Length: 381
Image (tube, rainbow, N blue to C red; front, side, top):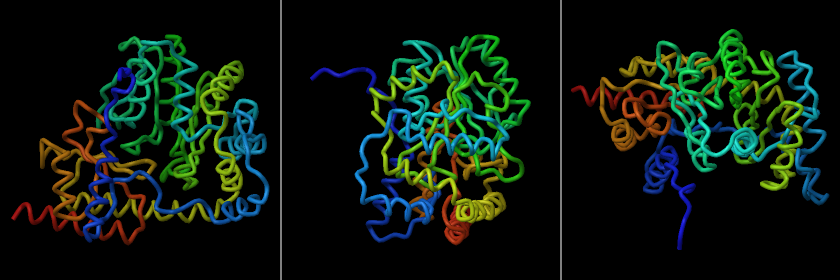
């Protein structure tokens, strides 16, 4: 049977690592998971209890833009967190951030247009762009500039759009107000669309995240309940779009998805009022972050930008290997620690990098660091 070139996307390597770790566990090994980018915790207990109360009622389709109560609560969230007066009509509830990206790319770009990504970056940006007939353009960043693109990159690469992430996956670095404003201005000067991935907002440590809505309204802002709200498996996110884009995005959402899952929207609505439980989770990541930076340096992994947010550290391992994928396999086999090779995030330079996640319990992080130190010491003896 014939097939489309749209399906010719690269594999998501971290999923292969997860499968190798699962096989090791099935064989009886104890594995510490530093590869997976999801909280070890579940959706807030109070939010799940609210859903249980609602299950006596049929949960059918919602309107395409999402439950009005949830859209209104998200608008209030922008007032609470960022002092932004947001019209709920601009909020679109999506099937996870992945659904938001598909809607954004479909709404903003025509076939073949060039969309910039600051490499290293979340790999699915690149693969979704390819799958919908667009041209992902990797913008090489550096450790010295904390892995973020520069305003000059928009003109230099002749871009129709730019995706920025702050805090970023895999690096955990953030853009400050001035940096984000400069990128927004550069996009406006070139009539390039700006998409701001803010999925890790709420998980920052030394300074608060800046939303792109604080510097411009001419932006698509993508967020999700997966990370701070600890709801990865529920597959619900949101997007803020300019007022004159709402109807076009609504038409796309109606036809592509009908709506985000009703049950997940209800849990998301109530999760937004579970701050105490969510901040306990964040406190664990804060502790883990300090342990990871110290423990990785002690083990010989000392080339990284200290993360501002999220729950990742992206480490230059070129002093130890020219093949990060093989090195990750050696670490899994020899130390029982699963880590992600950088090829997922940067196809050209990722063979020299590993991503370590610290989204697990503190006890698991301590054990993983001890194993990494022993593994590296054994390799040097």
